[in-house]
Amino acid sequence: MEEGGLFGIFSLGIIQSEELETAKLLYGTKLGGFFVLQGATTDSLLNVVKKPVISENGVAIRHPAVWMNMLVYPSLDGSAVDLIASGEGGMFYYKFQGLDDKNRQPVYRELMEVQQESAKLYKGSLIVPNVVDWNGNGTLDIVAGNAAGDLVFFENHGTNEAPEFAPAVHLESGGEPVLIKGGYRGSIQGPPEAHWGYTSPTVVDWNQNGLLDIVMNDARGMHTVYINVGTRTEPKLSLPKSLYLESLHLAGTWRTRPGAGLLDERMAYITLDTDDDVHLYWQHDKYNLEDGGKLLMENGETINANFLKAGGKGRAKFELVDWDGNGKIDLLIGTPRHATFPEPERGVPWSMNRAGAAVLLLRNVGTNSQPVYEYPAVMHFKGKPMHFGQHACSPTATTLGGGGLNILVGTETGEMIFFRGDDISFIQPDR
Image: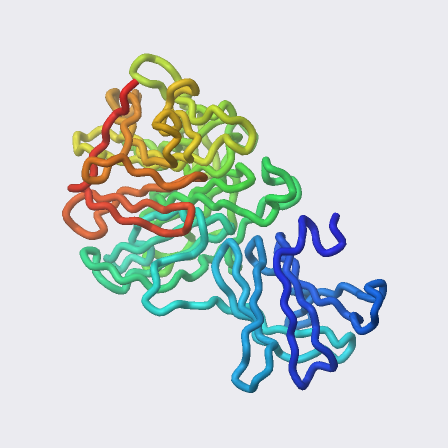
């Protein structure tokens, strides 16, 4: 453990004003630690003491996002004590409130998000969008997860044909904002990944009562369900419950977005299993699943996701959609760059000159009750294959924007890119 902070210091800032006896050095750490160095008034660093920066209620502030990078933000009165701090989940403003009486530690108001006028929609990197009418008013909104571990809601104040989205607000569960973190043991990549959450939600009427619920995987590889206990126009999420298979938590690889929906009037749940194979589960009840077996290609082979191991596994984002309008439910999959669907030696998109993450379509050539899939086809835009960086991408099919079925893709940079269906084709690569 480094003396500055676990896994290192990521930013420094010096605050000064007439109120302060001396200038003070603040710093932020990789895991969101926020500290002040007290006593640096002699020539010897041996007298320096590290103290947490505290909030107005006297509790140490923990920055919500990994990689706390801060800037001292000048005030109109000429002092330099307020802070703007960025991180994996956005940019935040800390307002200086003075020094506490006991230890003369800097006190800051709880963070506020920094907003940009007429900005692109953004709420953190590796955004995982769902386009749904979340609040039942007839317009399509966006519910999303992200790398920081949030669940957020972008309300559409426009129309479905010409949407205008409000800034994201955090969804709550049991009265508290949903915030998932890998923690000390939760992430397959160990404690350095403790402050990431990688929430990967799918919005679906899971218990088929007319209300939209959320099923989700995350950085811990934990499959959970949030039941909507509110109303259609005022949704309210319960505390999360684990999904079980044969009396144990459903096991699989991390950071997958489950594909959930009805197949022949039966609720299906598709994700990657511990072998990193595409696997079908059937809902038994709202908290329990039945094994439907590994899904197969038309040649009888299983569908494997990645040639890498450990943290390279998982990451795929699934959506169930009848893309061709033939009544058969296909698989839309967002992949990382290193994915090798359906087999490690020649799978895509890695075999395509390692060009980047991609959106795949696996057409169902079986039935909805017994799906079987063609070789993956890669999304093209106006005839050119589309790639979306390194770590992952997350597509969702939607009628947002009008004109039929379109695709919205969440990217690793946090951008959400809209593609009209008329400009999209899915083409199998040469093999």
